[in-house]
Image (cartoon, rainbow, N blue to C red; front, side, top):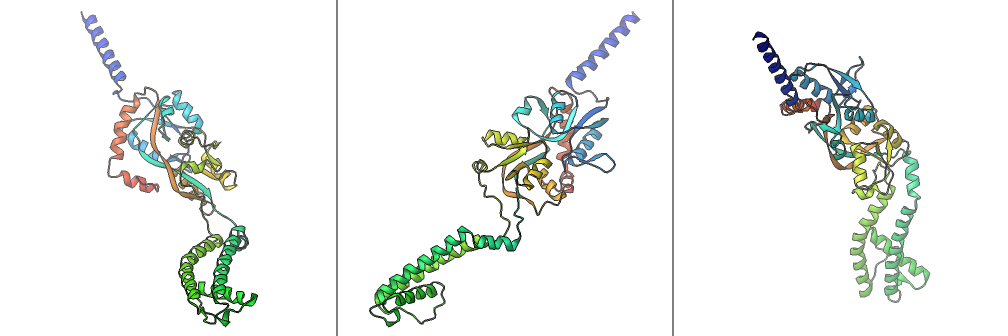
Length: 359
């Protein structure tokens, strides 16, 4: 009888433990393998060989809540994706973006950060004097100046026609035509020397029309000349995704930005890492490099690339950063609860700010 009772107790205990394991609510006693990839400011390597960053700090808080023991294992981007898909790691805390393709191959936690896709463009590094002289003698500048002279000559010619027989200041012949052009020029520039002035009714009507017309067109010409001669760092004119199809674009292979570009039929050059892509941008191998804004911003700032590379004002798409795990992971349910507690806490904004991020 005692043997039967002991057997029943053992069987009952085993069944309960198995049910707990299947429900995913059992305590995690074994050491977990946590996959990481250096992705500042989310995952960075310390001088002592450890790791720091937003994802690291968030995971450490979660692990403390759950009483989990773990060890980090570092991969590159592609290797970490494959390791997560194949179950070689229990959890990846790299800030992977949730995409439909990845959702088919792995499970994701609740998002802990929302980011936009940003465009990095190279800034103009030409010598200011050289750039000014080059722009001064450029075709665009010469076209603006030529058009300005044509307009002046037209109104000078009209005034001369109206005045040449009635005003000795606008005598007949080439010399009189020159006087008309002179009057047109000083009137347009509002200098108004008064040495030449129309006296006939028709000449004055033309003068009034010219005065009001000049006020309108001079501002436009001035703006065009200033824009042509201005030597400043101006980014590419990219307003919509369609504009990306007209230039060479780079991004990281298999990244969410690559998915975004593929979905919009934008051709791009794929790089193995963000660092490789930004280097290619700096050397003019691509016109723009598209990737997650916080990662690009940190990379530019930490490597003092502000004078060479800048982020375009326009942004595209939205990325939701989450932890990822192999399919049907029993770990994620517990991680999600602890993760939500952390990002809902008042301290979360301070944690973000400590890494130069905001939500």
